[in-house]
Structure formats: C-alpha cells, structure tokens
Length: 460
Image 1 (cartoon, rainbow, N blue to C red):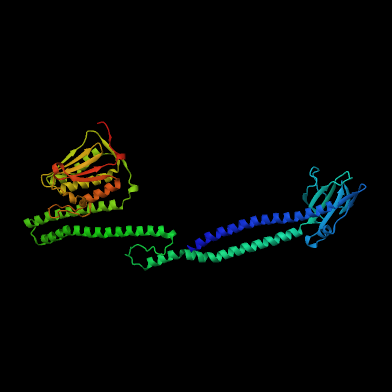
Image 2 (cartoon, rainbow, N blue to C red):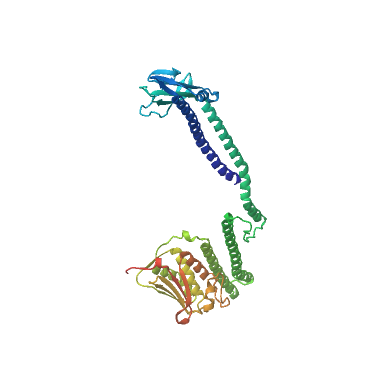
C-alpha cells in the first residue's frame, strides 16, 4: 500500500516538473530573445541617431558608447551596415538585407539569416535624414551563440532545480506516507492483539478525522457480526433444546421395543410414540430449514410478481386440511368470487401463510375452527381461530424464536411458526398484525399488503 501511494504521489510531481520544464524552456527562450533584441535595437537606434547631412551629403558620427556596444566581445559577433536604397554607405557590404515595410518608418524590423557561416539575428530601422531624398536603412546583426549559451545555462539551472525538487519530494514522501498510515498501523496492531471472539468496538482515540468514518463503519460491522454470532449461538442452543425431547422419546421407545414382545400392546404403543416423535422432529427440522432460508435471504434479490390472494389462500387451506382433520379442527376459507391480485413473491407468501395456519391449528382446541379470510380493500389475509388466545401483553413475544407461552398445554408446536412468518413479512414489506379473535375468543392474525401492491379487483 505504501508503494502504491508513493507511486501515485511521485507521478503527479514528476508530471508537474515536466510541465514546468516545458513552460520554463519556452519562457527562457522568449526572455533571452527579447533581451538580446532590445540590445540590437538600441545599437541600431544609436547608429541611426548619429546620422546627419551636410549640404546634401550624409554624415555618420558614431559615439564611443555605440562603438563599445558593437565591439563588446561578450556580446558575440556584431555586424552593421548603413545604406541608401541599394548603395552601401558604411559597414559590411555583404551583410544580408532584410525586407522592410516602407510604411513602417522609424519602427524596428527583425529577421533571421546566415552570414559568414553563422546564424544571425538582424534588426533594421529606417531614418529620414534632412536634405536627403531617400530614407536611410540601418541594419545591425548579431550571431546567436551568446543567446544559445545563455538559454542553455538558464535551462540547466531550471533542470537542476526541478531534479532537486523531485529528489526532495521523493525523500520526504515516504516519511509523510508512513506518518499518514501510522493510525491504520495502530488499528491493525490492535486487531492483531485481539482474540478470535473479541468483537468489541475499536477505540477512536487518536484517530484522524479522515479515518473517523472508516472506524465508525468498521465498528458498525463489528456490532452486526457480534449480533449475528449471538443469534447463531442462541439459535443453536434453542434448536438443540427443542430437538432433545423428540430424540429422547425416540431413544426411550427404541429401548422399550428391544425388550417388548412383537405385537404386544406395549410394542404398539411405543411404535405410535416413535411415529409421533418422528413427525414432530420432521416438522421441527422443516421449520428450522425455512428459518435458515429466510435468514440467509437478501430482500433486494426477492422477485415480485402478480399473485392472486384468493388462489394462494385456497392452496394453503387445501394443503392443511389433513393436518386440521387429524386434530379435529374445522378449516374454513372465506374469499370473494373474483381475483384479488397483488405483487408479491408467491413462494415466500405461501410459506408464510402455511406457518400461520399451521400455528393456528396446532395451538387450537379439539373441535375448534380456523378461518382463512381474504379481503379486497385493503388487500389482506386474515387467519382467525377460536382457541385459547394470547393475553395482549404477551402477543409481541410470539414473534420471537422458540417462544411457547404455554409449553405444558399438550401441543407439539416448536415456537418457530410465527417467527418464520414475521421474518418473511419483513422481507416482503408486509404488515403483520395480531389481536383478539371474533368475540374476544382465540386470535386473529392479519397480513396487510402495502398500498403500492394493493388489490386489483377483477371480474369473475
């Protein structure tokens, strides 16, 4: 990680140095050229200012300063010429002549050419001399070696400064990165010192503000993991406890069968008890699997499709008739003549209603009744029974796992049915209401579908 961060930091610095180098080179070249052009123009102006006339004859009186400028060895080689039209009055006769715009008198014109095998920079200026009919053209040329030496020196200085900047940054960046990552190192060391089951929140003391959100999110994840592990431990303990009873019954009656005579009343009774214990264990395992599927599901992956609540309720009632008949429970379906369509997940909604109806049957009294009623507006399914009911203060508890408010009442429920239904309702975004049954007898559980999935009534 440190290497990647250094790479991402050094690369922009190097790119910036490259951009500064290109821009600096351009600026240096322009500046050196501008400075030398000003010297050339000053020299040409000095010569032009020394021009005069005497009875129509052109005179040239160069001052010592102008000669000093032209003869300065540090200024490289300098050449000049003074001409009238094509006539060279003084200076170097073979100096290249540059084109001058006649309308731009008294203005400087610059050009580049070659002279005596060297590249030269030439400046020209015209001057009107009294009593002289034609303008006088003064040209001054300078070789470019001095300019190039000056530009190279400045560019080398710029390159040295940029290399020093990059080297300094390369030396300081690892220190800065290590100091910046020190809080993460401390957090890593703290996590390494912890035991496998230690999910307490990390301390935010000394953590920079930039890492505060990261620590907070990590602590939130730790809290979720702790809650999840606690739920798994509680689920495992409860499931083990619930399975212990039917397994004990099985082992006891298997031992009885070993010593009982085949076909005896004792053997028949043991076989019936084994069958009941096996059915109870199978029911418990099926509910545990349903609960595991719901817990491992992801609400965002649940696919909703159109479903007819009337048909869904009829299928569930048909599937539970055998269980109700075996327990001497009357199972009744109340539904409108026309379809009641909603958008839901049919498989999950069916599993939820099966658990609710199964719970109503198992906890009802012999000869009791369970009614499954489909409502149109709002779209809902009500499951009513006339069993012993649940006190209002205990009704919220039945949605907790393995909760049996009266475990000695003789029913074989596992305490998971309504918990599974509640979890599925949360996954599907449904409201699950629990109150007293008709005439304050038994229990009524209502499944209400959300407004955006409300009933769509169709003709028969």
